[in-house]
Amino acid sequence: MNELFTQLSLIIISFTSNFLSALAGGGAGLLQLPALLFFGLPFSTALSTHKVASVFLGLGAFFRIVKENRLNKHISFLMLLGGLPGVWLGAKSVLAISEHTFSILLGLLTLLVSLYSLFNKGFGLNCFDKALTINRLIVGFCGFFLIGFLNGSLSSGTGIIVTIWLVKVFRLDYLSAIAHTLIFVGLFWNATGAYSLTVQTGLIWQWIPSLILGSLLGGYFGVNLGIRKGNKLVKKSFELLCLSVSISLLLKPLILLFT
Image (cartoon, rainbow, N blue to C red):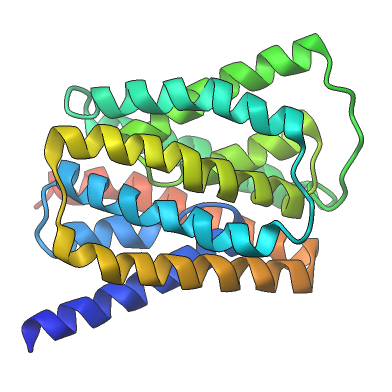
């Protein structure tokens, strides 16, 4: 009975977190990773288990995104070229670097991102056809590498940073930016991180099917709602989730300090 309750809880948590992530362009780890920690997993094992499940967020989103033709092949290639080495290095460093330090820094960055979007009313609502100059490609590459490192080592909230990076640097609208984030972060970055972490720490295989089911369904229906309702709903969802992620990341070290 306890195992059945656990499996049902995992499906609900996975669906909810991945639905919100697909709608807002990141943040699945806000609910899913803490939930795995709550069930008693060590951080490294919880992170690897979360990573494996998150790959299927990208897969679930892919089935809906592919119909919309929103992917830019040059930006897509740059996300792989810059992001994958960063994810691999981050995953290799996860056991050596303070989780609290990462949590605070990423929390502050996410808070700034949410406030920036909130106070720029038109930000991310339209897609501007900006030429991919050498400077823009170099800046984009460096950003993807650094965010990839955070993705491999901390996970929570990094998809949101990728989304805002795509909007700010490449002038995509939110829907187009989220399409790139869900496919290349959700599928390729997370697959790289999952493999690297699993080799080091292992994962809880009996929980994977429930997490995968929730990820697939949440990814598909989250993207579907965002496409149907448009950029205004996505922008508001993004800002709300950003604030939630930043508060969660900033409070986590304080909670652990006093427990």
